Amino acid sequence: MLTQAQNDRLTRVGPGTPMGELMRRYWHPIAGSVQLNEEEPTKEVRLLGEDLVLFRSTKGKLGLVEPSCPHRKANLSYGVPEPEGIRCAYHGWVFDETGACVDQPSEPAGSRFKEKVKIKAYKVEELGGLIFAYMGPEPAPLLPRWDILVWPGIRSATSVMLPCNWLQCHENSLDPLHFQWLHRYYGGWVMHRRMPKEERDAWNAQTLAKGDDHRKIGFELTSYGIIKRRVVGDDTEDEENWKLGHPILFPHILRNGATLQYRIPVDDTHTDHLVFTYRRLQDGEETNEVVPFENISPYWPGTTRFRDDYVRGQDQTAWAIQGAICDRTTEHLGVTDVGLIMFRRLLEQQMKVVEDGGEPMNTYRDPAENEIHVFPVERFTYPGYDGFTGGPFLSDTPRKPDVEAILSGEGAGLKE
Ligand code: FES
Ligand SMILES: [Fe+2]
Image (cartoon, rainbow, N blue to C red; front, side):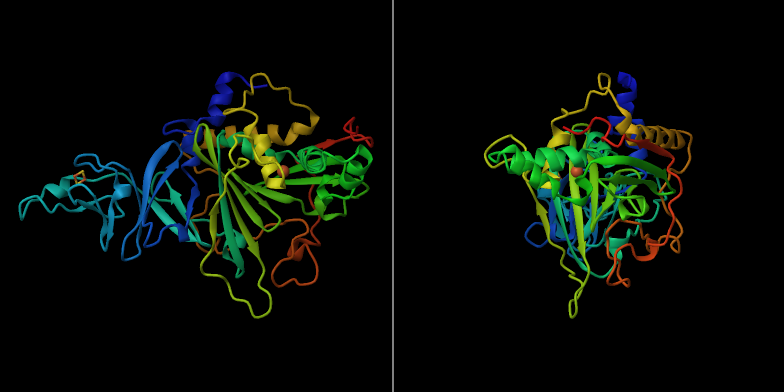
């Protein structure tokens, strides 16, 4: 249980809030590269409680600026892209990607008025077919080159806008137990609700390797975040679920399977669940330079009920039905929630680092260090390590988790 003040500190992401300031030290994906094209050269974006306009000039430069033209306040998402920037629809002032006003066609020739006009602009970079923004203080850290964003492969991305706070979405990454219930049990029930119990249980028993009864969970703090491990069913600690686990990259990314799952704080009550998916190249294939990007509704068509007939939809449902901002002042955490507690403490510690003027974790400034970050992920086949999973991490011995919970052989009362 948290106090209201503690919950506010962890969840409020607007300008000037402790969490907002921490989040502003990181790069956030805000769009797919394919979303800005000749037909749609601008895009309205909301990130960390701020409305912004993303544009691509006809020379190909990306800009991310405040939406209101400083002349008579017309919205620049209606602007026309030009070689030097975006030309306001109303009276033609032009702003470049630094926010500088570079043309005021109706002012007298020789006027230097435009030099006095500047709008807010943020840094934007592209990687892996995604457009990332940085809204923090200069100098910006490097845009992190996570493994699957960088490797040759077939890439795609999806985005789902959810009507809830970012933290309840991402706390799910620290909650391995939900797999057993939300996906195997509830998911099985949703998908097979007309089946008798025995058949449903038979179906559940053969579902997903992570969905068996959890006997042990562990969390290890690393320089880039937290590694989550579990022992399920009759497995031993030699199984990859424990040996490798998978990482939660600080502050808001789950690196799982062949995906990066970003829980991007749009504002206090909206989260963009952006999932980047990677597949290794097969013989004769080449990396797709055009990376498809799809916006997906979280709802069943024509309703406001959340779609729960696929694994990620079940996750999204569970996050959103906690309410717009989960009320942690009345929650009751159990032994299986040790990962959440660890993550909240880490967030609090890192907010303090920023408040004290320091550099938070998992930010990079040395290009050599940022060439590529390869992570341990269970049952993942790594490029260059064909024919088996675990790649370069297979022979690693995990160190003892910083936090763990041992559940009884009966699943700590978790069985029906
Ligand atoms: S409102 Fe933008 S140029 Fe006048
Ligand atoms: Fe899940």
